[in-house]
Image 1 (spheres, rainbow, N blue to C red):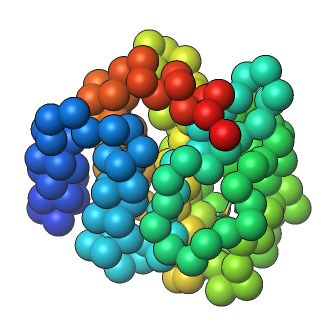
Image 2: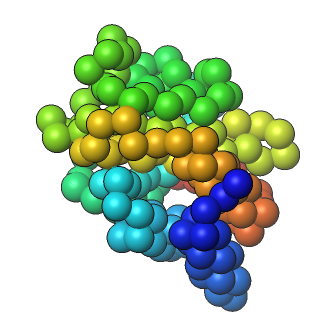
Image 3: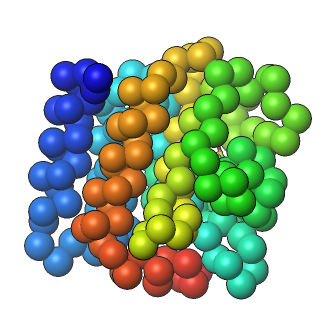
Length: 165
Ligand code: SME
């Protein structure tokens, strides 16, 4: 069951994606800002997209403290592992992970959910939290829904993000 707050957030995401001629990066940034502002445990929110030629993830939009990890090789860190596994990765306590890239010493937990376009894992949404173990199945559902909305709204425009930069 998705909570009322999450339903409201999803409705807001849908609303902002209705904006005519909205460039993908602007839309993604607005979603990051919305989630960061609205959900208490979401302290950093970003979208990475895969470049399959170089086997690298690139950060295309975020809200929160700037990170130096704007490019991440497939397989490295939580994000890099999700690029290969195609599955959600919930990390209740980052201290328990060996293959983890720290963006800030304040981060205690992380949740990464892949973004699929026509069945292919082309990117992901990444949430960092300063709270220990804050994520539930509801968060996974919310972020899966957000990724699906992004996919439907921007479609093939998202493929261009893979080679941009
Ligand atoms: N912690 C991530 C790196 C990205 S930052 O969280 C912004 C990881 O281990 O892949």
